[in-house]
Length: 129
Image (cartoon, rainbow, N blue to C red; front, side, top):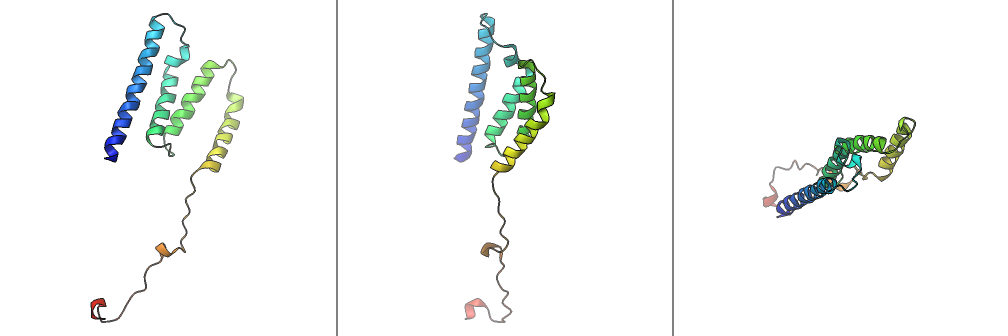
């Protein structure tokens, strides 16, 4: 049942995305002012990265690269100054935020669930006791 809900949720998200894109195209065809960067491939890369991240519950993966590249290229086309001088500090800040907020996975090898039971070398079976 959980997979059906997840599939329906994914279809719902894709449907909403198509409605938004169609609305943007209608607004542009009606002569309304639509920024040029909204319909660019750079924004598409950013949106696809965010959708893939959402579908995977934002677990680390390739979607992060799509979001970083898409956002850097989109910001480069929006803002008039160059990001060359800010690229490395932004990457370092992002890496620092990732290290701070990443999920904690503790492997406690001394915990009881990692210990093996002692071997029983008795000739008798457990049912005979």
